[in-house]
Image 1 (cartoon, rainbow, N blue to C red):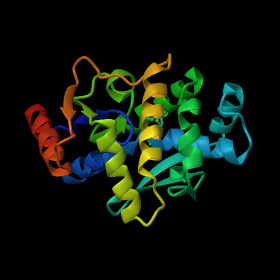
Image 2: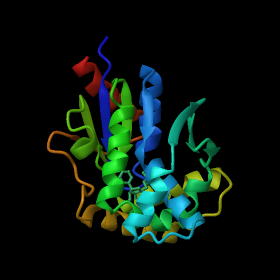
Image 3: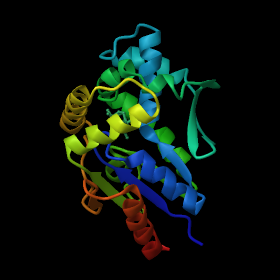
Image 4: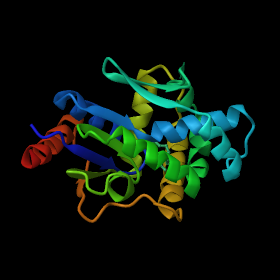
Length: 222
Ligand code: C5P
C-alpha cells in the first residue's frame, strides 16, 4: 500500500490536531503537530528572556534545540532535548507570543527543513498553517479546515473545562481572532488555503464527520 502524506491546515482551534491524530491512528501513520514546534521555541524564548522580535537570538536558541514529537497512546509528547514540555507549551504565555516567534523567515526555514525531514518517508499526517502551501507542496491529500471564530472558541472553552483548566469564552474569542489575523497577515508563508486543498467547514460537523471525509479523500489516492 502507498504511504500517503496528508496536509491539514487551518486557523487556530479549528480542530486540526484532534482530527489529524485520529486519521493518523486509523492508518498507522505518524502525526506531526508543527504548531508544537513553534510553541516549543516560544517557551524556550520566554524561559531564557529572549525577545520574540529578535530573530538572531531565536535562531541561536533553536540551533541548540532538538525537538522530538513522540507518540504516547492517543496523544503525542513534545520533547526538547529530552525534556517533556507537552503541557508547558500550552500555557497562555506561550500562546500569546507564538505568532510573533513564527513570523521570522529564518525560524520558519529551519522549522520547515526539520518538518520535511520528518515527513520524508511518507505515511504522515501533518497539521499547521503552511503545510499544503510550503512544507509539503506535493502532499497526496490537502485539507483546509474552517469554522467560525465563535464555534472555535466554544470548542476550545469546552475542551479547557473538561480538562479542569480555567477558561474564559470571550477571552478565547479575542485570542483566536488575534492569532488568525497575525498568522494570515504575516509576510512569510501566511495562513492560506493551498490552491489544490479541499476546504471543509466544520462549524456544523462532528469530529467523526470530518475524519470520515478525510479518510475518503485518502482512499481515493491509495
Ligand atoms: O497549531 P497551534 O495553534 O498550536 O500553532 C501555534 C502557532 O504556531 C500558530 O498560531 C502560528 O503562529 C504558528 N504556526 C505556524 N506555522 C505552522 C504551525 C503553527 O506559523 N505550520
